[in-house]
Amino acid sequence: MPELLAATRLGRPPQDTAARLVVLVSGSGSLLQALMDACADTAYGAKIIAVGSDRQNISGLDRAVAAGIPPFVQAVSDHPSRADWDRALTAEVAGYEPDLVISAGFMKLLGPNFLDRFEGRIINTHPALLPSFPGMHGPRDALRYGVKITGATVFLVDAGVDSGVILDQRAVPVEEDDTVQTLHERIKIVEREMLVAITHQLATRTWRIVDRKVLWT
Image (tube, rainbow, N blue to C red; front, side, top):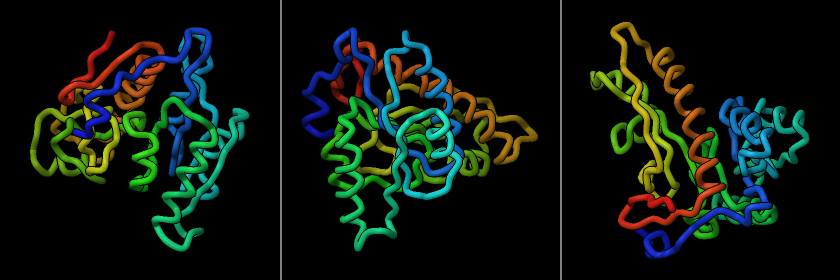
């Protein structure tokens, strides 16, 4: 656990200011849409100030444009190296001065510059009950292993693979006739609900992390 996460108290912005969110997407943007719907209520306590992607011409960016939210693209292929991409993405996101960065189906591993700049403020979801079945194929791996219960996790991103501090988890039963697709679709429903709920908590309450535990005040 980085020393900063163990020691730093994090919390909501002034009560008259909504928390500023930058959302990163790589695909259709269903998680983004759930957050946009929630942010439409001023009582939610957060607003999306920009939506970024590593890809052009995706539905997630179209959703942002339709909602009047500034979009941006930082593609790895547009930079000489992965390190250059990392620095460019960090600078772009930092320019929006976000309180939280939400990885909502963003399919690139964030680099060390980005992780250092936004340590303890990057939120991600995973379609399994971590630490079980990390990586790209959580529902598939759960089915292959034969578990009877899987689920979804919301966590703080760190330098590992789906290894950060767990913010919340919810269980999803595995049905006898489940395929990877049917199981994943049920997990996605839980993921959206949980991401909306935990982002609201992070935006409106004070909290700190001690020994991988989130303490709310």
